[in-house]
Length: 411
Image 1 (tube, rainbow, N blue to C red):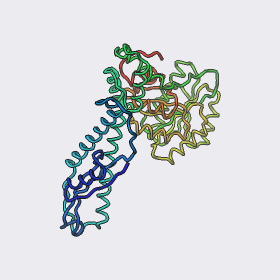
Image 2 (cartoon, helix red, strand yellow):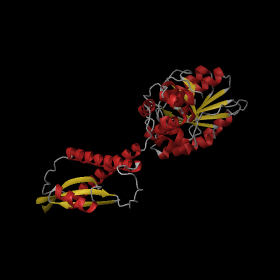
Image 3 (cartoon, one colour):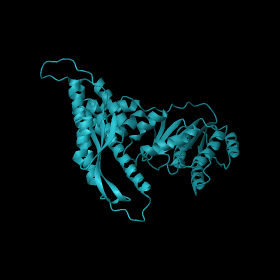
Image 4 (cartoon, helix red, strand yellow):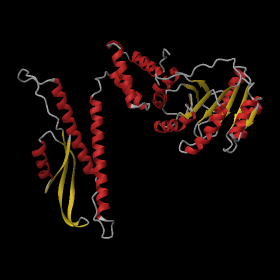
């Protein structure tokens, strides 16, 4: 593909030059007035500049067809090309309407080079935006023709903040696997889609009893509810499963964190230790080695504090836990979740734990997290009550939260 600028005294003159060289199949990406002459572009005249693109790929001669008949591929190409032209035209109209009128540059302005650089940056931004819109158009033009029920599925997934790529994959599988009659049955479609989502979510393996000194640690950013979650898990282990339980906290930075966990430990009659160094962590693990389960609460760290995460890693290495649950809030955005996972991956988490599902508008980010981390989900929490408001995570319950149809899955 060639991209070239054409200059003329008028916009029509520049466009005529473009058509003379590129032909009628060229796509106009940008048109603008450019000042010339004068000091810093002031006091001179102006000309018009047209930026256009043209595909130089050789076109193979099509097979001979009866008069008046056009191949389907040619018709499709014409449709795409026509849509691209329309898109480029609408982009240009929008650019003209949105472009502020340039004010004369004062005599004491920055050097001409800096002014030109700003113009160049704006041009690059405009072209990038135009090409992005063209790419999206081409991508959508390749989507299969969908029934109304599958269009509804796709819209529901996007509304739940499922990534477009994943939503399209789910819909395509549904379109391929279900018969025509089933696709017209919304209940059958919803059930198939919910099961498809559930199958994309890995569940944490069920822990087998009989081993002493089993260590479980929770890690994650600040404010996700790690301490409350630890209290819930410890309560269930002791009160429901009848295990002997011990608590260790390395959260010595947050005001009141130790007092909060100690108050719970006293009420539940669970022994607890506070550690300030990795060596103290090793000693505490050794101290509680005869207990069935040892739960470790850790200080919350921002994913942007790499050095603090490295420091936290020393405590985790000293504890050598069997399970490391990376805790994230359900109301985090996908970009935040990705950043957290990327930065906390050095702590070698082997489970994902999602809190505050009762506060989340949507849970579509779970599918992206499942795909990118390849980690199983362990628990979901939906409130502050201890030991309530927590449940084992499963593909079925997460699928229902994501798709929100209330349809039972086969998981």
